[in-house]
Image 1 (cartoon, rainbow, N blue to C red):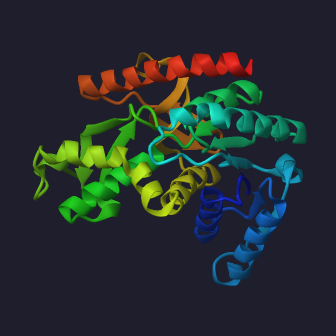
Image 2 (image 1 turned 180 degrees about the horizontal axis):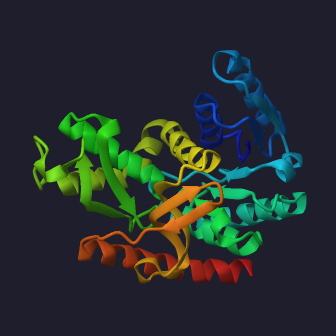
Length: 311
């Protein structure tokens, strides 16, 4: 499987490429960037490590890589400022994103290609990509709250001194201010979270507040997130490449799940080789369902402004 990463000269794109190299699933990685010299340099650096990792073809370049790509991962975009919401980025990033979509379409896409949107605000741009690229809607996926979910799990595990890989909890809705923590299904090692040693309800708000602010915290401390985003991207691409049918909290255009339509946001989504295989309307607490619906309403208001801008 060939994966092309647009914006691979930047922190997120290069970390995604490294995570995919270490995962060893993709047979070919193509790193694309407006700064082609940077993309070629990143590819060369990765290539030098390949004898110790995986048998992969790793190249840098431009949109000539798009026509034979199975997955096209768009990470390009302007960085969020520490005090800026992801939705505030929309006017600064929309024009850049539209140009990328135009270039991708002009290069030509495989009929079966999957487009993974990572650029922020990811839910808005996922909807725009689904509308503008002409692919079946199930073949356009946004990274959504997969990143928030693994951040959430990592913070719960740290707080309770639990194994991170056995800590399971979801964030759904918007990748942004209106994200929704799903406490109703949270577990550690298969145990309900409220049965795990050390848990008390007062931790819930503390952990969620830090999760919601994790992106801004990383930006403030080191300038931008990279490693965890790269891992989250790898999670989604591995599910596609291996047709895992993994249930992941990724963003896609909704058509009725939890009563939500005509907006892209994250619900439990079955991800496989064809992209979005299914969406699961699992039982949630009423306040969680209402939170997801409110998230959709907030996103739709912004989306209407964006669609008017790009139409």
